Length: 242
Image 1 (cartoon, one colour):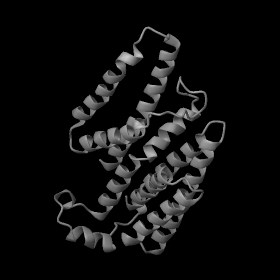
Image 2: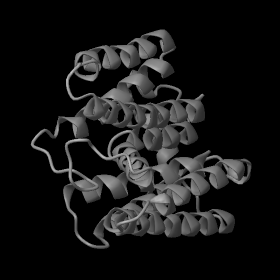
Image 3: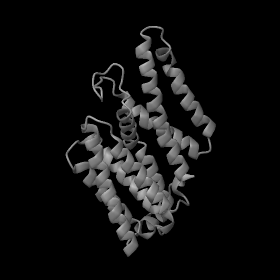
Image 4: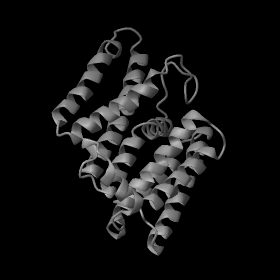
């Protein structure tokens, strides 16, 4: 699964860079460079591996460009969503062809004394790094793309992506996904489901108000769709790591 881990790392770095500095072409170039460097650090230097790394670099560049286009285009944003799903599905299908990672990464893991990395293979490390990485900014990007593609607009907004003074959701979403993924990997699936239920209870007073029912229905749809997509990112990552 080394190729899949590197692909997810490339996506994660691209979106994190874009969230920090919205310079044209910079995020996708940084993501592609980090993905290529991760592959070489993992000892993937055979002809087949180099070809796979170049393909991953191209996909990461395409992801960054289509995401920028998707948010700037007035219509639905199915293109970047299709790129993400197709790329991940294809790499998963071809994962049997990927050799086990080794090289400097294997030697580094063997020298690290952290208990959490004890016995972790290079392949597992790459996949975990990529899976947890996409919980950060990529998860938010996927949620926004789905909301935009389905026309599910915030009921208090006049445009597709509403400006707001409350930016906590951009941090709460990644924290929630990381929390769910960590609990699930630790065998605490029930605890992860409690986190999901707690989020609904916290929003229940707002969503059950008797005033302005049309806005409440819109808010409920917006909340449910965004939450389910966010949870799907975390649970999908758990399936890949299982």
